[in-house]
Image 1 (tube, rainbow, N blue to C red):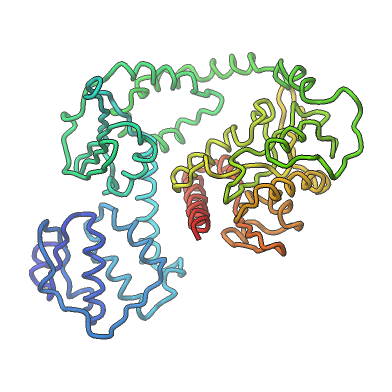
Image 2 (image 1 turned 90 degrees about the vertical axis):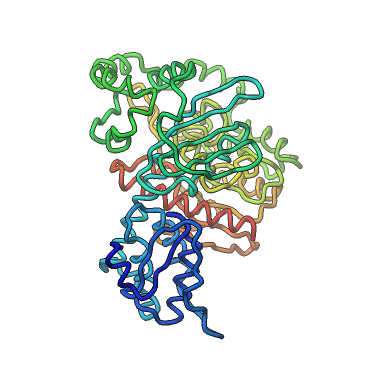
Length: 487
């Protein structure tokens, strides 16, 4: 609000900071319950002020707004739009008489809220991806400092992410409006800084550039998409950015060289690994007694599984992994190429997306059990590559015996079906995942099954904005899983 408008306002609300959502929420509640119209309020930031001149809450008055609004408003509050305080109060005012407002996608205020949320989430994603720490000091004085320039007021919102990711480090993130400092035990939010306050380049940046150069995939290069994901404004603070022009210029030749070096269908050690894990005789009739009384014994028994023909071409059985007393089991579809060679679930590209989003949601990967509906890699040879092929209902049914045994030994409180194949395995019927996503279905045996997509779906989306949106939806699903784990 402009100074002239602020002076004409009937009520002047002074917030302690740009991110003082609790102060805004308290003032908005008091004003709304006293029927103060949006145009009668002036909002501004004035550190150290109080709200003593605002009306108190009438005795017995109740303000009922959807929980969804509070969550979404808290996100949009971090936007840099100076009119956001007044805008969010206008939304609150309208919701009192239009409780379904947030479901009306065509409404200008609803669209504006969604646009602000997306901008804040995207800025947070960039902060997670593009903060680069530089080491200063040694021994007891060692700590790591980073400089970042966000578009919005997101430091407080994302500080916990860095605490979880770098718990064992002492670090500081400096931005123009705020700083976050972690001393190994306590997180503190302080005032902003200047770029000159951040340290200069250190020796680790040469290692980072080497890493970036080696993971660069020229065959998948899309310059416009890359610049959309990594806008040039961030380049000046990224050690790897100096390599980008050269890598782009040589991408075509590098892609041709990479194709020429592509390995044969299975890795060279495929036959040795397969011989180690598979008996040298023809498949025998499956029995319903493996003699296993622990997950470790069950995993060992699975190595000779011949319950369906997939064992013939797979490198090895890829069994579940995690604690044998896990409260939740995540069930995917089947192992992919990298899982087939490693013998471990969720270690390929989709597994890395899965791990990152679990971390963002605050779900400890070490405390959950992950497995697949089908324990062998089903694929179609295509030239020198092995292309994933969806398991059929018979293969899912044959492998359900192992799933049931895993659940019987672990006795989880919750199962998460990652995609349609996992849902078929857990529920015994085909369900529309996109329609039932986020729902909890209780089986006859009392097990709760949470429905969501498989993280590989995110990888298949080409449009960056759609990919970001789908990642956020999956993150919300994982946050709900965390809530259900604690319930």
